Image (cartoon, rainbow, N blue to C red; front, top):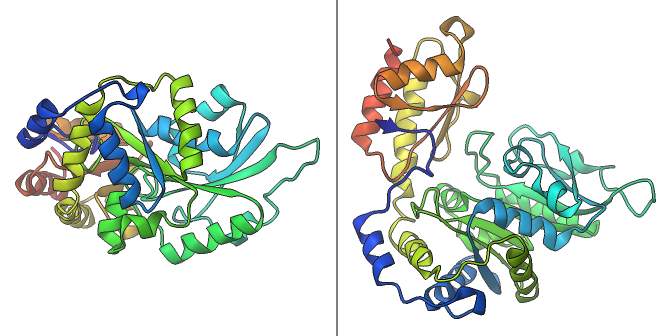
Amino acid sequence: MIDLRSDTLTQPTDGMRQAMAAAPVGDDVFGEDPTVNLLQERVAKLLGKEAALFVPTGTMGNQIGVRLHCGPGDEFLGEAQCHIYHYEQAAYAQLFGVAMQPVTSDRGLLAPDDLQDRIRGDDVHHPRTRLLCLENTHNRHGGVVLPQEGVAAVCQWARRHGLACHLDGARLWNAAIASGQTPAELAAPFDTVNVCFSKGLGAPAGSAIVGSAEKINQARRHRKAMGGGMRQSGILAAAALHAMEHHFDRLREDHQNAQILADACRRAPHLELAGDRCETNLVLFHVDPAAGPADAYCQRLREQGIAMLPVGKQKVRAVTHLSVSQGDVEQAATVIATGPS
């Protein structure tokens, strides 16, 4: 099966498995796992922040990010299609009593004009607006890279209005490769940033939240309260370290392979590439109703050995990653260009 449903489906490479097996470990809840400590130091430096905290999942990293800046009765502003809103079960409400105010955008980047009159102050009738959240790359907008000039502008606007800024950078590595900017440059406008090691970089699990030393010290408490205090987690941290060292630059291959799929969508009967664009490793396309719904289309693909993910009634997502080769992608492209039988 050529599995293009997600870049979370990668298998650890032999080198990664060797690094995991050889990793020195300790009890990370006591701060004594040397491999976790090394990962946290390196990712903080790479993102230009004072400190980092290793967490089990990107969802936990984002929720800690919200909690660091918001308490019960507060709210944050976020793009209406963002991961925190759609795919994290409104955990900010369940766990912390925090609300989100979703704001619509064209391509995932909120601008100051979108946010005018959205900030609510200390009126007893309203939640208090405390935080702005962005996502880069933006999943539901098709893996687009947020223009950094616009990111900086809206974060500056947020600060002038007393808001903190958090970035869901689950695929920030892809944004860095596609834009030519460093992870630190992309992270600079934000107080806290969440990054994932288990997507494009190909580690089996793990994310990190970065920020000031004070915020990350608070984050450690929130991680413990959420059940994220792992013990000899250096085994997982070793995979993340290996991925950062060996798999970051090769993300270009995933982007190139995604273009092969995007071009096939442009040629395919009954398909339309969303926005006629593909910027990173996500390919989002619409299926003409004449060809049936997206889930039926994906079932026909599966019968020919190709797995993609229906993400709407007529919308499909394909994601290139470490565990699919150029040959695999070319085979899938041939099928979608001609139409699955």
